[in-house]
Length: 337
Length: 171
Image (cartoon, rainbow over all chains, first blue to last red; front, side, top):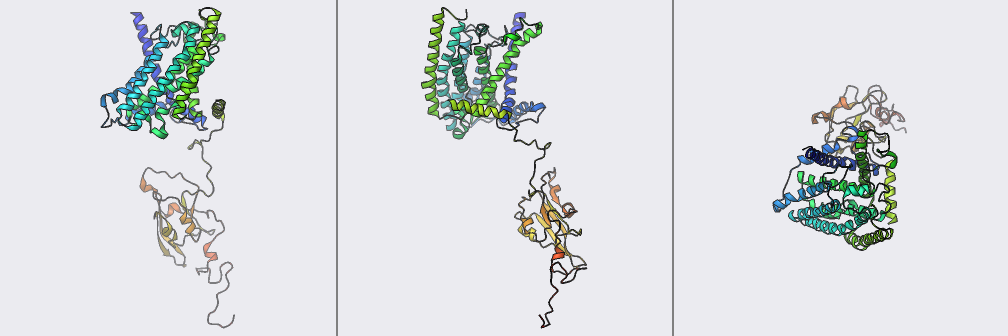
């Protein structure tokens, strides 16, 4: 019974934590973008404008929830829910602290990859069901982009898996006790970060919603709550990618050895909260990096995007995997064990 | 590739730059002296109204937001009986200031005129008249114009020659 209760509590904390975090990111992104552009950003509502996210959410829910007359109604309604659900599902395998994970799957990483692939359905169906040429073009672009970048997204992570000898995210974190994988797997980290940008269709790779040519891409026809689901889905996507980068390459909940609660004089409460604190701190850093990339980088042309994915990133990912495998073999056996 | 990283770094450095934003109600922007804001009616150095009710400002106003009525006092001075500017129409183009022959109507660097009721944006003469001379401190129309008013006859204005006697043959 208490076991079930524990799982329920973890589930609720992760669910509401993730949603609140994503809603907070509206403010974080607006504020950071403003700072990168020598502005102040929203700083009026509450301390530092922190309540701006709430105001934005209230505004978006008050909007008319309009369905185009010629749209494919059921698909149109379901599409935004798909992305939200798939992204939230991928949160379930992430280990935020020792033992604090919704589903400690032994194939956690594969589960995440599967869920991020499912996200393609959302954008492709949204583009199709809107019955709008721009939405359709955006949906097609999104589908092609996500499928292409998924290929090396998975491959870029295989180096980490080889080193850790496990697909389980808690095991991968534990394998980084001595050395974070960002050092031996630096190419993998860069590849995964770029793939993550493309998977979340964030700015350098936001061709599916390139406003200059496609209005708003696959969500051109969406408004109100349905648009909010795409919106939150995107922020959740950033969060989950950042959390995964932290888990796979930056030691997850492990702090620097100096602050190791097991060795330090910290109390039991601190030892329970510290790992989660480290995790959130590191995740926030990578969210900031996502926003910095949005502020700094121009959008490539569509054929450049495809060429880059297939002709540069995929071979690099394969090379990285090959080299990692060779080194692990040469040193004898699985690195982490 | 390297240029991309340099671009990211250049944007990151902007985090620590000075902000361009002026947090307005707390921090006032620096408005130029010739900013075209709230319209006022100025007075002579003597304290008399400068406006001679010539209607030029009302005629030139592209949105017809100025209304006035001319009147003449017992000393021969023309002045507006009422002078009304509807600021809910005014576009602050400054044509009235350009048209004014006596420097009476002037635009000031004040833009904080928001009202909850539209009717409150209609300013009457007593709202528009200020105590001072505005941008032209020494100018006094009746002291330079040849018009005779009480206390100043023909030929008594600044740099004005005495009137020519038309019936005389002497130069």
